Length: 400
Ligand code: PLP
Image: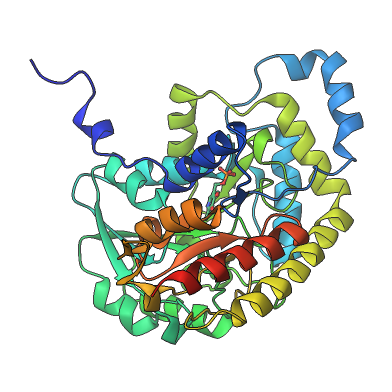
């Protein structure tokens, strides 16, 4: 008898970061003193401005019933305002679709664009889910490896080398998870110039970490006229407003045919994002810009501490993150070394070792396509960061 579970779902990898957070939670529940540097979300409470809006939504008929599949018009208008005022980009509400977090926005675009064997170019290191989503659509992942030499950014030449007549989509994530790199305006201009020669290639520009930046507001690839109609911006309130649990993300695209396809897909799968959460997101966009700035400043301070302490650990190399809340140090100088008969040969063995010997949880770089590195989230308080890095240093020093 054939297996119960479809080949499609069997072939998907589990999310490595979620798995590590779960192991960590379990160890803590068993009474172990484990510090988690696995978190993919701000540790802050969401902005207080959203609370009265949620209270109001609880008593108003509109928010307990079905709404538009594409999302509430008032929220989509607010997103258009945000795109204009923060990014200088013009969109209309029919070019926006609100989704249940940014993740399904990406999945919907991939499922709407990709036919079997269509190629999707993904620079690595990259977020764990991109390649799996492409697999779900039976597309072909074309990974382009970037290194510390280019601050983990794909060059225009690398992009040109990866594009073929079968390429349908490019996935760009800036600020990047896991490396924290941000493409500059000049680098994006070069990428746009290459894409001008490939008019059938769409781009997902994942800007979910846009507001967590340390070098100024990042530029969007959508700002370049040669590609603006083919760029789908992905964003949401998860990271900037610490509203991960509200599950509100969105996509913006000038290609209304694509937006309509995504709306059709959402209409046949999830219907729409929760109305109360949509009102909360709308309120956050309207009223909580000071909150975002405070959150950003807090992360900037933590990043400074992480960089200082990583600098004190011998034989590791790290590119300073320009955005997001992750450091992605290269720990490969410790591969092949042992402690008490146990040898560490790769990033998964390194994260297991750091968990068992150092009682610090982090995520193996292999999950993001770079086995030399491990990902450390600094979305946690400074005393925990200091203690975790002390433990990592001591555990690494034991490896001989
Ligand atoms: N894109 C990237 C690069 C992410 O790191 C994440 C979450 O970790 C997402 C998208 C998904 O965000 P959301 O929680 O809004 O679905």
